[in-house]
Every structure is written in structure tokens, then in C-alpha cells.
Length: 181
Image (cartoon, rainbow, N blue to C red; front, side, top):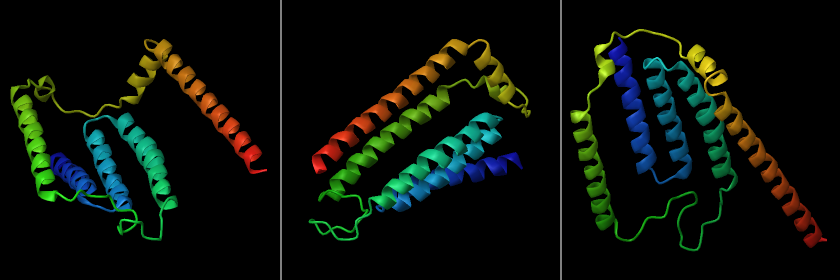
């Protein structure tokens, strides 16, 4: 049963990723990215990484992807552009055969390199029995004991960047207001 779920999540992830690459509509690509991220979260659950699965759904699906979809929908232009393309379409060059050949060549090279790496790899965890253990307790204990200083530094860095972004946005808004008066 676990293998069937693994294959289903793998197929969902791969089909979603291929659809993101092959679709020319940016909004459809964002929705296919949703499928890909959900498939990856399912693979995390199967790998007993429940914290990563929840973080994947909350951060990427709940935050980043919603932001991307809102950005695409808010910047949608109903009128056709000067080069007579449809709105929200990715521009493609005039030499599709040469570009497809180069893309296939690069993708084939990456595929061969990854297959060679997987064949030579020695997966130690495959010899161990599969069991379900929650990783949240381990992550929490390590973050609050062993990695407390990097955790706090990351928090301070994020706070400083948030304050800086707020300052820049506020100063830009003041100069914009003064220029429009």
C-alpha cells in the first residue's frame, strides 16, 4: 500500500512539474505548481518527515503560491500587447526547433548524470526497517538546545529585513505623495 501511495505521489509530482514546464499560460503554470508541491508534501509524509510536509504545505502552498497567483491575477492585462501575444503568455523565440534541441540535450545530460549518481550511490537507509516516527520532537529539541544561536540569528536577520523593507516602502510612499501634489 505504501508503494502504491509512493508511486501516486511521484506521478502527481512529475506530471505537475512537466505541466508547469510545458504550459504557456502563467496562471495554469501556478496551478500545476500547486499539484507539484502537494505531491512533494505527500512524499515527505511517506518519508516520515511530517514536519517538512506541514511546512511545505503551509509555507509554499499557503504562502508563496497564493502570492504568485495573486500577483499573476492582479497584473493580468486584458488588452493585447504590441507583439500581438495573448495576455499572461510566456513569449517563445522564433527558433523553436533549435531551442527544443538544446533543451533536450541539456535535460538528457542532466538525466544521465543523475542516473549515474543514483547507480553509484550507497543508500544506507534502505537496509533499515521502515517505521513511523514523528520528527517534530527531535527538530524542536535541537532548535532549542543545539541550534539555538543560529535559530535566533536567523530570526533577528528576518526581523531586520522586515523593518528595512517597511522603512523603504514608507520612504518611497512619502516621495510619491510629495511628487503627486
